[in-house]
Figure 1: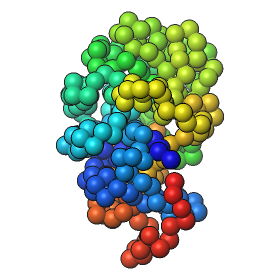
Figure 2 (figure 1 turned 45 degrees about the vertical axis):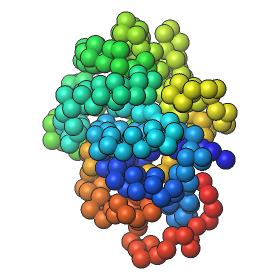
Figure 3 (figure 1 turned 90 degrees about the horizontal axis):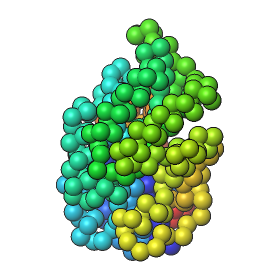
Length: 311
């Protein structure tokens, strides 16, 4: 059964694993290893088995030379493209804002405004990150991206254990003090962002927080049949809901990424334990392997012999 392939919530695949993806796309399949059970799954990447690719990134440059191959074989794709202008120290090793805007504009020009969806995500509040700062920053970014996209997804940071630890490191160095916003603080800021987005021709969507939906704010589905239909043409694919957490609106997809394999070092990231851990894994990643990253216990093992099924 054809599926949407997420590439990937677990890592910035376009930035760090573009060559691996191109190799697997040409081969027609990849392997994915469950992070908790170790089960090996085979995922078909053949054109007839992929409804669309959803790429998650803040730096698509390394992947862009391979996109014409997807166009040629007729596989739709869209980008969930993060631009927050947060910068160091919270986003310690990300691309420059100028580079991000430039790549966003290039993707939109080549593939259309429906293929590039802006993420102002996550919103992080502290004594140095007051709501007024976000309003001004968002207004500037929305002005720069006007006409290049029709959707903007936002969310407030989730304080997972690894996120708390990584933000604590930033606090220790900078003296910042991050806090969990109240419901009212979220609501007021969200309404301000929605007004700005609307003025720039964008729909603002709340990711995983239905309490903010309404008054000009829609519910986000980052893996969204309607968004896929806009780039693919035809009717939206009929896929069952498959939420990844509370209030998630996504439909079923297959994610082919691996945790701790993105080197940008964003302190709020739920997918990376630490940048040092990610760099160690990146050093051992092989673009010619069938799996994005192979744990030491499976080095030298033919993963085809360990497959437990498709999916």
